[in-house]
Length: 208
Image (cartoon, rainbow, N blue to C red):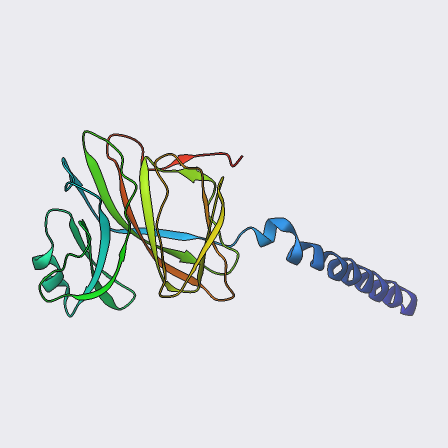
């Protein structure tokens, strides 16, 4: 009886030793590390047939209430409530303003694309440190405004960064890129797009 109990205890200890020895590989494996989620949510969009003339900038403003921002939005303006604030994003000439809005920043000049119809979209995106998107392209440009954390963008031109309160202008259409959370805290950002509405919004790509 004692011998059988001893054998049983040895078997349990051996099984536990195997489990513990396997744990570091599970926790620190590249597969587990790459499971960090980069979240993307569209918060506003509209299609337009024509863009304003001349060099264009994304103007970002805040408003006390969503209804006020919506009332102030022009043909190329999009209102959204994100991260506890009400925002109005307007694609237009440099130096414009909206009645009742508080100016945050302007980003541009935006690289433009010629298209029969344009999609203007605002995304709310981000994730924990190390989270990243797959390599992809858009049929137009995107511009970034960082609310918290640190943004990283890798393209064939290199790697660029922007910290909280800073903006980053986008590249032209069909530029391969990977966007990632480059800081030590969660990335929270707003992303503004002007793209060809007749093409897929995003396509897989390979980085050179």
